[in-house]
Length: 334
Ligand SMILES: NC(=O)c1ccc[n+]([C@@H]2O[C@H](COP(=O)([O-])OP(=O)(O)OC[C@H]3O[C@@H](n4cnc5c(N)ncnc54)[C@H](OP(=O)(O)O)[C@@H]3O)[C@@H](O)[C@H]2O)c1
Image 1 (spheres, rainbow, N blue to C red):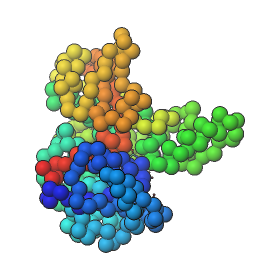
Image 2 (cartoon, protein in one colour):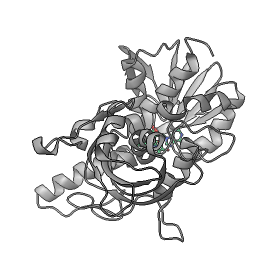
Image 3 (spheres, rainbow, N blue to C red):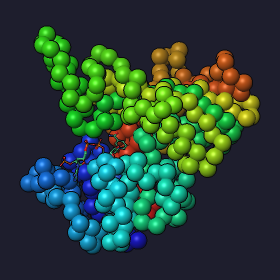
Image 4 (tube, helix red, strand yellow):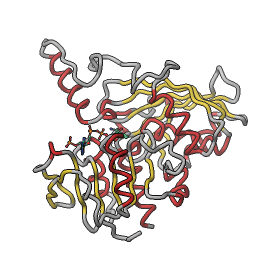
């Protein structure tokens, strides 16, 4: 890989795309040229990168000529159509959608966990689901130390996880309620302002949602742990940014809260924020816009053998999407 690659961002105007551009700039990723791609709706718009205004181009068949790395975040159907085309044109695709995550020929990577899987790519590398990524940042170090068997978890997912339109929906609904006007809904099936929705993604015949099953399926692949089991309830909450997850994990080996704190205190990409006496624990308001995830509320689980409870929070637009993608790109040019 060229050490100063030509980079394209597909879905550059979206909630994730904008963060990708910012993250490339903030981490001083060496880019020869940056091509910004979106739909016809965005043609004519410009976005800033390193002080320079770059015009958005319409995504098309010829968009990848001369590109070395393409960061995709325009939804699954766009990835399915254009990622193989981009790979064929010779660039490495880092895809944020769920289109290729479970494809055996596509590595699914969190660099702090399985960076070496990147070497196995044949043109496409997948970024994991955001809730899974944030959970695994704390779970994987514990797994290495104590061998996780299964988890029970509930997520508290921010509206920006649904995209730019959902951020507008929460803002609009808060304004409508404060002004005493009727609430309008466009993105979610129910009012999200001052409410919680136990519904993220579509329902499966089992009663779980697709989002909920990503934790088990993607967790197995990333941790190389095919026996890992996860029972998850995903919940959308009226928070703008950063997801949080309450986890009860059962391990094969005995675990104590103190031993877990020692392990988690040394984990890469993770900060230990765990002093309940001082009312210190991770909260989405303070993990938003941070690269590191935070873990706290660590305690022995009173209902499981060798069990541990913890609470992990992280910016899903960053570690759950843009940051993780740029970290993969950094590995590619190493
Ligand atoms: N939001 C998150 O926290 C998060 C986390 C992990 C993964 N993801 C995944 O990342 C992807 C994008 O999510 P998002 O939250 O950024 O969504 P979003 O805010 O709705 O942005 C969607 C982007 O895709 C572009 N797009 C839509 N249709 C297109 C088309 N026909 N041709 C070219 N570009 C098109 C949009 O361009 P226009 O502005 O021109 O319409 C926009 O740039 C999804 O696959 C999502 O599952 C999101």
